[in-house]
Amino acid sequence: MLMAAATILFSNPILARAQDNGGFYELETKYIFGNFTIGSSTGIEGEKAFEPETEADFGKRGGNYGVAETELEYEYTLNQFMQIELGPTVSYYNIHNVPGLDDRNMGSINGFEADIRSVLIDRNPSPFAVTLSLEPEFHSRDETSGDKVVNYGLETRLEADTELIKNRLYLGFNVLYEPETTRSDLGMWENESTLGVSSALAYQIVPKVTIGADLWYLSHYSGAAFNSFTGDAVYLGPTFYWQIAPKILMSAAWEAQIAGHEVGVNSTLDLTDFSRERARLLLEFEF
Amino acid sequence: MGRYFVKVGSIAVALSLAGTALLFGGEGARAEQGAAVAISVKDHRFQPAEIHAPANRPLAIRVKNLDQAAMEFESVSLRVEKVIVPGGEGVVNVRPLAPGKYEFFDDFHQQTRGTLVIE
Image (cartoon, rainbow over all chains, first blue to last red; front, side, top):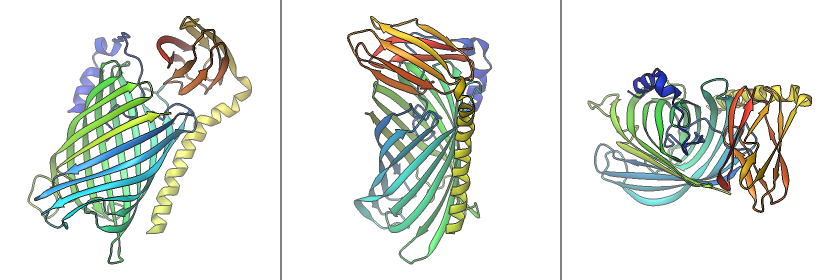
Protein backbone atom coordinates (compact mmCIF):
# COMPACT_ATOMS: atom_id res chain seq x y z
CA MET A 1 0.00 0.00 0.00
CA LEU A 2 2.79 2.42 0.98
CA MET A 3 4.80 1.36 -2.05
CA ALA A 4 1.83 1.95 -4.34
CA ALA A 5 1.26 5.42 -2.89
CA ALA A 6 4.94 6.22 -3.25
CA THR A 7 5.00 5.01 -6.85
CA ILE A 8 2.03 7.22 -7.75
CA LEU A 9 3.61 10.24 -6.06
CA PHE A 10 7.06 9.55 -7.48
CA SER A 11 5.72 9.20 -11.01
CA ASN A 12 3.78 12.48 -10.82
CA PRO A 13 6.08 15.06 -12.42
CA ILE A 14 4.21 18.03 -10.95
CA LEU A 15 4.50 16.73 -7.41
CA ALA A 16 8.05 15.55 -7.92
CA ARG A 17 9.10 19.04 -9.08
CA ALA A 18 7.27 20.83 -6.32
CA GLN A 19 9.75 22.58 -4.07
CA ASP A 20 8.00 24.59 -1.41
CA ASN A 21 10.68 26.46 0.47
CA GLY A 22 8.29 28.36 2.75
CA GLY A 23 9.98 27.32 5.95
CA PHE A 24 10.35 23.69 4.84
CA TYR A 25 14.05 22.98 5.03
CA GLU A 26 15.90 19.69 4.89
CA LEU A 27 15.58 17.27 7.82
CA GLU A 28 17.83 14.64 9.26
CA THR A 29 15.97 11.49 8.30
CA LYS A 30 17.06 9.14 11.09
CA TYR A 31 13.97 9.60 13.25
CA ILE A 32 11.35 11.04 10.88
CA PHE A 33 9.76 7.60 10.27
CA GLY A 34 8.83 7.10 13.92
CA ASN A 35 11.84 4.97 14.83
CA PHE A 36 10.64 1.44 14.06
CA THR A 37 11.83 2.22 10.54
CA ILE A 38 15.03 4.22 10.86
CA GLY A 39 16.26 6.71 8.27
CA SER A 40 19.76 6.81 6.84
CA SER A 41 21.11 10.03 8.41
CA THR A 42 24.18 9.50 10.58
CA GLY A 43 24.14 12.93 12.18
CA ILE A 44 26.48 15.89 12.12
CA GLU A 45 30.20 15.45 12.76
CA GLY A 46 31.05 15.94 16.42
CA GLU A 47 27.41 16.01 17.55
CA LYS A 48 26.66 14.49 20.98
CA ALA A 49 23.21 13.67 22.32
CA PHE A 50 21.37 11.89 25.12
CA GLU A 51 18.46 9.80 23.87
CA PRO A 52 16.02 7.97 26.13
CA GLU A 53 14.11 5.57 23.85
CA THR A 54 11.23 3.41 25.05
CA GLU A 55 9.60 0.52 23.21
CA ALA A 56 6.39 -0.86 24.69
CA ASP A 57 4.61 -4.07 23.69
CA PHE A 58 0.99 -4.74 24.54
CA GLY A 59 -1.28 -7.76 24.24
CA LYS A 60 -0.82 -11.50 24.00
CA ARG A 61 -3.39 -14.22 23.38
CA GLY A 62 -5.02 -13.76 26.76
CA GLY A 63 -4.72 -11.94 30.08
CA ASN A 64 -3.02 -8.60 30.51
CA TYR A 65 0.37 -8.01 28.93
CA GLY A 66 2.44 -4.82 28.92
CA VAL A 67 6.23 -4.71 28.68
CA ALA A 68 8.39 -1.63 28.20
CA GLU A 69 12.11 -1.40 27.58
CA THR A 70 13.94 1.93 27.79
CA GLU A 71 17.38 2.41 26.31
CA LEU A 72 19.33 5.29 27.84
CA GLU A 73 21.57 6.06 24.89
CA TYR A 74 24.55 8.32 24.47
CA GLU A 75 24.92 9.17 20.78
CA TYR A 76 28.09 10.51 19.20
CA THR A 77 28.79 11.24 15.53
CA LEU A 78 32.45 10.38 14.97
CA ASN A 79 32.79 11.93 11.51
CA GLN A 80 30.72 12.64 8.39
CA PHE A 81 30.22 8.88 7.81
CA MET A 82 29.87 7.11 11.14
CA GLN A 83 27.83 7.36 14.33
CA ILE A 84 27.83 5.32 17.55
CA GLU A 85 25.27 4.89 20.31
CA LEU A 86 25.61 3.04 23.57
CA GLY A 87 23.90 2.75 26.91
CA PRO A 88 22.10 0.57 29.45
CA THR A 89 18.53 -0.67 29.16
CA VAL A 90 15.81 -0.71 31.80
CA SER A 91 12.72 -2.92 31.51
CA TYR A 92 9.29 -2.96 33.12
CA TYR A 93 7.01 -6.01 33.03
CA ASN A 94 3.30 -6.08 33.82
CA ILE A 95 2.07 -9.60 33.03
CA HIS A 96 -1.06 -11.20 34.44
CA ASN A 97 -2.85 -14.40 33.39
CA VAL A 98 -1.08 -14.66 30.05
CA PRO A 99 -0.95 -18.30 28.88
CA GLY A 100 2.61 -19.61 28.97
CA LEU A 101 4.06 -16.67 30.94
CA ASP A 102 4.52 -16.21 34.69
CA ASP A 103 2.69 -13.33 36.35
CA ARG A 104 5.10 -10.46 36.92
CA ASN A 105 4.93 -6.82 37.97
CA MET A 106 8.47 -5.52 38.24
CA GLY A 107 11.15 -3.25 36.84
CA SER A 108 14.78 -4.14 36.28
CA ILE A 109 18.03 -2.93 34.79
CA ASN A 110 18.25 -5.26 31.84
CA GLY A 111 21.55 -5.13 30.04
CA PHE A 112 23.44 -2.99 27.60
CA GLU A 113 23.17 -2.09 23.93
CA ALA A 114 25.42 -0.38 21.42
CA ASP A 115 24.88 0.71 17.84
CA ILE A 116 27.45 1.40 15.13
CA ARG A 117 26.04 3.13 12.05
CA SER A 118 28.03 3.71 8.88
CA VAL A 119 27.08 5.37 5.60
CA LEU A 120 27.18 2.90 2.71
CA ILE A 121 25.65 5.08 -0.03
CA ASP A 122 25.35 8.88 0.08
CA ARG A 123 22.14 10.47 -1.22
CA ASN A 124 23.81 12.64 -3.83
CA PRO A 125 24.22 11.62 -6.68
CA SER A 126 22.29 8.44 -5.73
CA PRO A 127 18.61 9.22 -5.07
CA PHE A 128 18.74 6.76 -2.18
CA ALA A 129 20.94 6.95 0.88
CA VAL A 130 21.81 3.69 2.64
CA THR A 131 23.33 3.15 6.08
CA LEU A 132 24.45 -0.08 7.74
CA SER A 133 23.59 -0.40 11.42
CA LEU A 134 25.07 -3.04 13.75
CA GLU A 135 23.56 -3.25 17.22
CA PRO A 136 25.13 -5.78 19.61
CA GLU A 137 22.94 -6.35 22.65
CA PHE A 138 23.15 -8.07 26.03
CA HIS A 139 20.11 -8.67 28.20
CA SER A 140 19.86 -10.24 31.66
CA ARG A 141 16.09 -10.71 31.42
CA ASP A 142 14.02 -12.15 28.62
CA GLU A 143 12.49 -9.30 26.64
CA THR A 144 9.10 -11.04 26.41
CA SER A 145 8.66 -12.87 29.72
CA GLY A 146 11.02 -11.11 32.14
CA ASP A 147 12.59 -14.44 33.13
CA LYS A 148 16.23 -14.32 34.19
CA VAL A 149 18.39 -15.26 31.21
CA VAL A 150 21.69 -14.51 29.54
CA ASN A 151 20.87 -13.17 26.09
CA TYR A 152 23.12 -11.92 23.31
CA GLY A 153 21.87 -10.50 20.02
CA LEU A 154 23.16 -8.66 17.00
CA GLU A 155 20.52 -6.51 15.34
CA THR A 156 21.73 -5.78 11.82
CA ARG A 157 19.90 -3.31 9.61
CA LEU A 158 20.13 -1.71 6.22
CA GLU A 159 18.48 1.71 6.57
CA ALA A 160 17.57 3.44 3.30
CA ASP A 161 15.55 6.50 2.39
CA THR A 162 14.85 8.94 -0.40
CA GLU A 163 13.06 12.26 -0.90
CA LEU A 164 9.95 11.97 -3.05
CA ILE A 165 9.26 15.71 -2.79
CA LYS A 166 12.22 17.83 -1.79
CA ASN A 167 12.11 18.71 1.94
CA ARG A 168 8.49 17.51 2.20
CA LEU A 169 7.87 13.82 1.48
CA TYR A 170 10.27 11.02 2.40
CA LEU A 171 10.19 7.27 1.79
CA GLY A 172 12.16 4.91 4.02
CA PHE A 173 13.04 1.22 3.86
CA ASN A 174 14.68 -1.08 6.38
CA VAL A 175 15.88 -4.65 6.15
CA LEU A 176 16.49 -6.28 9.51
CA TYR A 177 18.24 -9.50 10.56
CA GLU A 178 18.66 -10.25 14.25
CA PRO A 179 20.20 -13.52 15.45
CA GLU A 180 20.02 -14.12 19.20
CA THR A 181 21.27 -16.74 21.60
CA THR A 182 19.75 -17.17 25.06
CA ARG A 183 20.64 -19.29 28.09
CA SER A 184 17.77 -19.88 30.45
CA ASP A 185 17.79 -21.13 34.05
CA LEU A 186 18.08 -24.69 32.72
CA GLY A 187 21.53 -23.90 31.35
CA MET A 188 20.67 -24.67 27.74
CA TRP A 189 21.56 -22.23 24.96
CA GLU A 190 18.72 -21.64 22.53
CA ASN A 191 19.10 -19.75 19.28
CA GLU A 192 16.52 -17.74 17.40
CA SER A 193 16.45 -15.18 14.62
CA THR A 194 14.16 -12.48 13.30
CA LEU A 195 13.99 -11.23 9.73
CA GLY A 196 12.13 -8.05 8.85
CA VAL A 197 11.46 -5.61 6.04
CA SER A 198 9.73 -2.28 6.34
CA SER A 199 8.49 0.64 4.30
CA ALA A 200 7.50 4.05 5.70
CA LEU A 201 6.36 7.42 4.47
CA ALA A 202 6.93 10.71 6.30
CA TYR A 203 5.41 14.02 5.23
CA GLN A 204 6.63 17.35 6.66
CA ILE A 205 3.20 18.81 7.29
CA VAL A 206 4.42 21.99 9.00
CA PRO A 207 8.07 23.01 9.38
CA LYS A 208 9.95 20.51 11.56
CA VAL A 209 6.95 18.24 12.08
CA THR A 210 6.32 15.07 10.09
CA ILE A 211 3.46 12.64 10.15
CA GLY A 212 3.46 9.33 8.36
CA ALA A 213 2.76 5.63 8.27
CA ASP A 214 4.97 2.62 8.87
CA LEU A 215 4.51 -0.93 7.58
CA TRP A 216 6.57 -3.88 8.83
CA TYR A 217 6.75 -7.56 7.97
CA LEU A 218 8.56 -9.65 10.59
CA SER A 219 9.21 -13.38 10.62
CA HIS A 220 10.62 -15.39 13.49
CA TYR A 221 12.68 -18.58 13.41
CA SER A 222 14.19 -20.96 15.90
CA GLY A 223 17.87 -21.24 15.07
CA ALA A 224 20.15 -18.34 14.27
CA ALA A 225 20.04 -18.81 10.50
CA PHE A 226 16.32 -19.21 9.77
CA ASN A 227 16.46 -22.92 10.70
CA SER A 228 12.79 -23.41 11.52
CA PHE A 229 9.97 -20.94 10.87
CA THR A 230 7.80 -20.30 13.94
CA GLY A 231 5.61 -17.39 12.89
CA ASP A 232 5.28 -14.02 11.23
CA ALA A 233 3.46 -10.72 11.68
CA VAL A 234 2.53 -7.59 9.76
CA TYR A 235 2.42 -4.32 11.69
CA LEU A 236 0.92 -1.06 10.47
CA GLY A 237 0.54 2.26 12.22
CA PRO A 238 1.03 6.03 12.29
CA THR A 239 4.24 7.92 13.04
CA PHE A 240 5.04 11.38 14.35
CA TYR A 241 8.22 13.45 14.47
CA TRP A 242 8.71 16.91 15.95
CA GLN A 243 11.88 18.94 16.20
CA ILE A 244 10.78 20.82 19.29
CA ALA A 245 13.82 23.10 19.46
CA PRO A 246 17.14 23.27 17.58
CA LYS A 247 18.66 20.76 20.03
CA ILE A 248 15.58 18.77 21.10
CA LEU A 249 13.38 16.38 19.12
CA MET A 250 10.83 13.65 19.66
CA SER A 251 9.87 10.68 17.50
CA ALA A 252 6.92 8.38 18.12
CA ALA A 253 5.15 5.45 16.50
CA TRP A 254 2.30 3.14 17.39
CA GLU A 255 1.59 -0.04 15.42
CA ALA A 256 -0.93 -2.84 15.54
CA GLN A 257 -0.46 -6.37 14.28
CA ILE A 258 -2.91 -6.55 11.39
CA ALA A 259 -1.99 -10.00 10.08
CA GLY A 260 0.11 -12.91 11.15
CA HIS A 261 0.56 -16.63 11.36
CA GLU A 262 1.88 -18.92 14.05
CA VAL A 263 2.97 -22.45 13.31
CA GLY A 264 0.57 -24.95 14.89
CA VAL A 265 -2.01 -22.34 15.91
CA ASN A 266 -5.24 -21.63 14.08
CA SER A 267 -5.17 -17.86 14.34
CA THR A 268 -4.80 -14.81 12.11
CA LEU A 269 -2.10 -13.30 14.35
CA ASP A 270 1.18 -14.51 15.86
CA LEU A 271 0.86 -13.55 19.51
CA THR A 272 3.61 -15.84 20.79
CA ASP A 273 6.59 -14.39 18.92
CA PHE A 274 5.11 -10.89 18.66
CA SER A 275 2.74 -8.63 20.57
CA ARG A 276 -0.70 -7.43 19.52
CA GLU A 277 0.43 -3.77 19.55
CA ARG A 278 3.74 -2.01 19.91
CA ALA A 279 4.83 1.60 20.37
CA ARG A 280 8.03 3.61 20.45
CA LEU A 281 8.83 7.01 21.90
CA LEU A 282 12.24 8.66 21.57
CA LEU A 283 13.47 12.00 22.87
CA GLU A 284 16.79 13.46 21.81
CA PHE A 285 18.65 16.15 23.73
CA GLU A 286 21.71 17.38 21.87
CA PHE A 287 24.48 18.96 23.90
CA MET B 1 27.16 -21.01 18.33
CA GLY B 2 29.60 -18.39 19.61
CA ARG B 3 31.67 -18.87 16.46
CA TYR B 4 28.58 -18.22 14.35
CA PHE B 5 28.00 -14.88 16.05
CA VAL B 6 31.67 -13.94 15.74
CA LYS B 7 31.50 -14.77 12.02
CA VAL B 8 28.29 -12.78 11.43
CA GLY B 9 29.65 -9.88 13.47
CA SER B 10 32.98 -9.89 11.66
CA ILE B 11 31.33 -9.85 8.23
CA ALA B 12 29.02 -7.02 9.26
CA VAL B 13 31.84 -4.94 10.79
CA ALA B 14 33.99 -5.55 7.70
CA LEU B 15 31.13 -4.40 5.45
CA SER B 16 30.65 -1.30 7.57
CA LEU B 17 34.35 -0.42 7.56
CA ALA B 18 34.60 -1.14 3.83
CA GLY B 19 31.78 1.29 3.16
CA THR B 20 33.45 3.97 5.23
CA ALA B 21 36.86 3.29 3.64
CA LEU B 22 35.28 3.58 0.20
CA LEU B 23 33.96 7.02 1.06
CA PHE B 24 37.08 8.12 2.96
CA GLY B 25 39.43 6.59 0.37
CA GLY B 26 38.53 9.12 -2.24
CA GLU B 27 39.07 11.90 0.24
CA GLY B 28 42.51 10.64 1.19
CA ALA B 29 43.64 10.27 -2.38
CA ARG B 30 42.60 13.81 -3.20
CA ALA B 31 43.52 15.48 0.09
CA GLU B 32 46.27 17.57 -1.48
CA GLN B 33 43.79 18.95 -4.03
CA GLY B 34 41.41 20.51 -1.52
CA ALA B 35 39.45 23.63 -2.36
CA ALA B 36 38.65 26.58 -0.12
CA VAL B 37 35.83 29.07 -0.05
CA ALA B 38 35.09 32.03 2.27
CA ILE B 39 31.81 33.37 3.58
CA SER B 40 30.85 35.89 6.24
CA VAL B 41 27.79 36.59 8.38
CA LYS B 42 26.64 40.16 8.99
CA ASP B 43 23.27 41.33 10.30
CA HIS B 44 22.32 37.65 10.46
CA ARG B 45 22.77 37.18 6.72
CA PHE B 46 25.31 35.09 4.88
CA GLN B 47 27.40 37.11 2.47
CA PRO B 48 27.28 35.82 -0.17
CA ALA B 49 24.17 33.71 0.35
CA GLU B 50 25.30 31.32 -2.38
CA ILE B 51 28.83 29.99 -2.59
CA HIS B 52 30.34 27.78 -5.30
CA ALA B 53 32.98 25.06 -5.10
CA PRO B 54 34.31 22.25 -7.29
CA ALA B 55 32.98 18.69 -7.11
CA ASN B 56 34.85 15.67 -5.75
CA ARG B 57 37.41 17.61 -3.76
CA PRO B 58 37.65 18.15 -0.01
CA LEU B 59 36.45 21.61 0.84
CA ALA B 60 37.39 24.06 3.59
CA ILE B 61 34.73 26.70 4.26
CA ARG B 62 36.14 29.69 6.15
CA VAL B 63 33.31 31.41 8.03
CA LYS B 64 33.70 34.92 9.50
CA ASN B 65 31.15 36.06 12.04
CA LEU B 66 30.90 39.87 11.78
CA ASP B 67 27.90 40.06 14.12
CA GLN B 68 27.86 40.83 17.84
CA ALA B 69 26.18 37.49 18.61
CA ALA B 70 27.58 33.95 18.43
CA MET B 71 26.48 31.86 15.47
CA GLU B 72 26.59 28.14 14.65
CA PHE B 73 27.30 27.28 11.04
CA GLU B 74 25.39 24.05 10.40
CA SER B 75 24.27 21.86 7.53
CA VAL B 76 22.28 18.64 7.57
CA SER B 77 23.43 17.48 4.15
CA LEU B 78 27.07 18.52 4.66
CA ARG B 79 26.91 16.91 8.17
CA VAL B 80 28.94 19.68 9.78
CA GLU B 81 28.46 22.28 12.50
CA LYS B 82 30.73 24.84 14.11
CA VAL B 83 30.10 27.52 16.73
CA ILE B 84 31.78 30.85 15.93
CA VAL B 85 32.10 33.56 18.54
CA PRO B 86 31.15 37.21 17.83
CA GLY B 87 33.81 38.76 15.63
CA GLY B 88 35.58 35.43 15.22
CA GLU B 89 36.10 33.00 12.39
CA GLY B 90 36.29 29.26 11.92
CA VAL B 91 37.01 26.66 9.27
CA VAL B 92 34.55 23.89 8.45
CA ASN B 93 36.03 20.89 6.63
CA VAL B 94 33.71 19.06 4.26
CA ARG B 95 34.18 15.71 2.52
CA PRO B 96 34.38 15.61 -1.32
CA LEU B 97 30.89 16.20 -2.67
CA ALA B 98 29.00 15.32 -5.82
CA PRO B 99 27.56 18.16 -7.92
CA GLY B 100 24.38 19.60 -6.45
CA LYS B 101 22.98 22.16 -4.03
CA TYR B 102 23.57 21.84 -0.29
CA GLU B 103 21.73 23.98 2.27
CA PHE B 104 23.44 25.52 5.30
CA PHE B 105 22.17 27.78 8.08
CA ASP B 106 22.93 29.43 11.44
CA ASP B 107 21.51 27.10 14.07
CA PHE B 108 21.26 29.99 16.56
CA HIS B 109 19.32 32.20 14.09
CA GLN B 110 17.53 29.77 11.84
CA GLN B 111 16.30 32.34 9.35
CA THR B 112 19.96 32.88 8.37
CA ARG B 113 20.38 30.53 5.42
CA GLY B 114 22.58 29.95 2.41
CA THR B 115 23.39 27.46 -0.31
CA LEU B 116 26.59 25.73 -1.36
CA VAL B 117 26.57 24.93 -5.08
CA ILE B 118 28.93 22.12 -6.02
CA GLU B 119 29.67 22.06 -9.74
